[in-house]
Image (cartoon, rainbow, N blue to C red; front, side, top):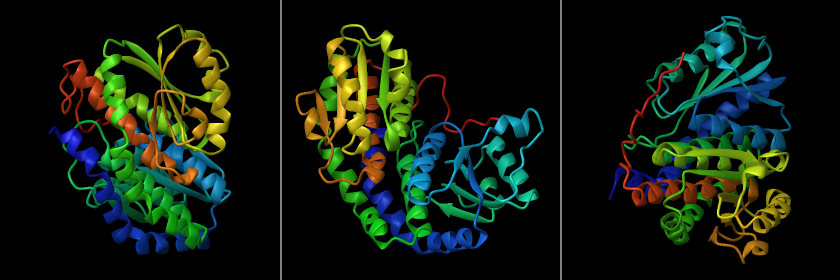
Length: 343
């Protein structure tokens, strides 16, 4: 078994341990945030971590009613002109904690008096040490270049922060069910392998999602790109229909991420258009309206706001199985390293 496969299967346990070890600590951080009462939230991240930040935009925006923006680290590093962050909650997300440009955002924010929180898998990392508060992922070493268990741990950490911030026992109870939902998703993802083998010759593809699972569309695309060295693009369904749908010809591969909820309702029309164009679709959903599709069944009854933690698993497995079908190295994709330092 490859490291990647091991780490995909380790995710339920990693998430469970994170909940057990960080729930009380995150509650204290949430208390500090409520006392600080930020005017807005700014999140700095790169790569896969940036997709966890996209999830945070929706989760914090919907549940905590906070305005959340994504930082532009190059403003801080290349141009040396940090924006005004006074009164902000500034969050840095990085698996390794060694992203220098993310660190610069946090450093600049602290100098301006902003409240800073970081989320990393290394409590001794520069990013972890730089912030007012740090959330550790406790995911253990991630040996495969493609991030999997650290990403779902990041999503879970964000969800815990949101639930604690709004002091909702119901949301916390829903989070405690996530490990079992991820385990069930792994078991129900068999159709991914057959779809990957049937589409092993693909050289380009698209992924689409909406709402909470916009991040899942982008992260699924990233996993396939880095593992399979193919051209792909992730879209919000709203943007996809504004022009990019023109790329879809018969048999063009499109992965649709549509867990039941407001996001899947929005995607119903887009999927009908894809079917009319005879796209080779793979639907990741638990919405019964999509049963006629080639689909991966997500667990029934899963709260939409937590669905990205499970919905990314078929995307991770798609990257794994497609790379295997193409005869590519799974744990060490050509031209990539585990830690990428950007300044």
